[in-house]
Picture 1: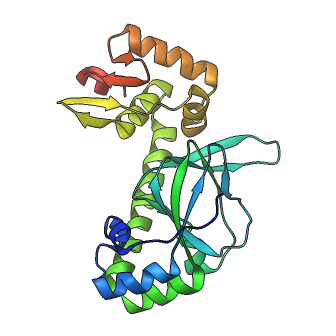
Picture 2: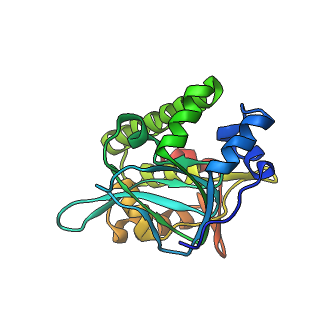
Length: 224
């Protein structure tokens, strides 16, 4: 990662995690937070590392992943602007449970464990936002477990595309596609199977590939 840069309260105002802080609190936080940039495919944290800081995404996307002794990987989630990671280890003082790697160039904010805990102790709104983030992760984990147990590969791919889609001019569009390999790692399938499913969804009129984006048709719900 690059050398740290100065953080302004104006930037912190735009971070959902700090929405409940007043100007004075933001000014104190700005002195403790460091802004860093990272290129594509950079490992930000590694599974098993000591937990020493919280990260907040300003721009770019990252993947949270785990791997076994044979090197097989599973992607737990994709993070984008406004989201944060690394908070669990700060709360229970455990090592990092997963690795986080950039999918593209990213801008990140980072705050040390000591400063983060001090901020939590002094602001109930910040504590509530962190708890909401943890609950969101738990719900996502429940959905993923349910999908793996109850859906076939077609349903898992369709569900993932729906979760990734943004509403644009009345359409659901996946603006930033993932590679088929990354999709396979997210849904517990082979790359070859994902390629076959994506092709079938396209031929069946469930999706329309437009360059680097994918438009989802209303009938994609039938593929779940």
